[in-house]
Length: 165
Image (cartoon, rainbow, N blue to C red):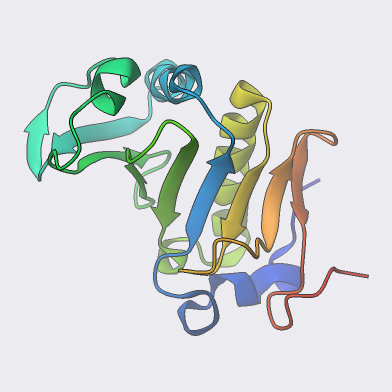
């Protein structure tokens, strides 16, 4: 049984409603959590590239990336859990694992399933919630991985921001 059904959540994949790159975050993280994400990416065999300031580089340890000086070039980890789907992690702070997804890459039930599997994998590895919010609206997650139930659940109606009934 899928975590979410396309018919129930298709508005979440509307760039006009959610923005062109909805925000995904895992709040309350540590350097060790970032390292666990790096290790998960490698263990799952997901395609990835790491860059600093747009220049490709080897993927260092999370502690090394997050200890860089203020004003250092932006570090990004681009991960494709399946061909044609990209998550862009931006390594700004140890306190939050954050990344963007493109809803145009996640259309139909297959897209929902890919997103849910990706959020579940990260949430289970970190044992923390993984929250998807409209672009620029970090405080109002709509779906998210709930570690208490071990799956992705609808947290609010994307049209109104209200809790689902």
